[in-house]
Picture 1: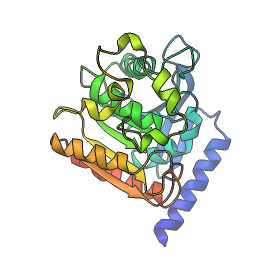
Picture 2: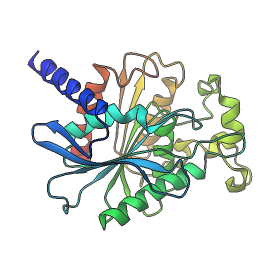
Picture 3: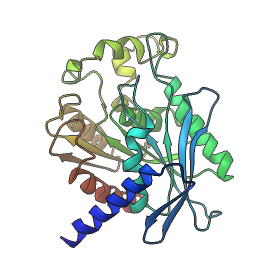
Length: 284
């Protein structure tokens, strides 16, 4: 009961921060303070912006960094969807850097990949330049953001700067019959991958599936899937778990009660953050 009261008070405090988002310093109680830079550009495109949160104490200390990647079917969504969750994570991980990013959306005239892979790379490069060191990266994304986190870490990160992946309701196998019922699947087939980067003889839904790029050398991965998710079926969790285990990749996965958008509601969000904390301690 006491823990619940503390969490409610902390949540109200975060709500107050959201209502006063123009402040340059975020105070989360318990001596936790972050310096905030909002809507800063990490690239030349107007969509390439992030909200950056840096621990206020000991700014020269080298720290790991979360890159937070929102969902929205690869063609919509905004970083603001994950602001509250990011602030909650900052309470849990006060010694980490947080970059909550927007990325270039896909459209009928613009492909998601490689653009969105380049956006993650550019965001990481921006952090390296700003911090004067390359932080260990933790990619955390939900839905399409979970997919992008896995794709980047498994296939588009040759320097292996990503040390772990937190995949929340992200599609891992786009060839799965269960996922093909997704109402925007035709958009995925036509506009997810630029044909120019598609190797000969490989179908779009194979190339764009993170499970196809799993090797023993990919980063540890934690996944979270809903038991009644009608967008990303639970079969995605089973497929991902199987391939990760087959390749002896350190991984954990959990199920929550609810649908696609229920992962960040209590008690699911509290459970998730506790599991992330334990998982990262294992990784380190």
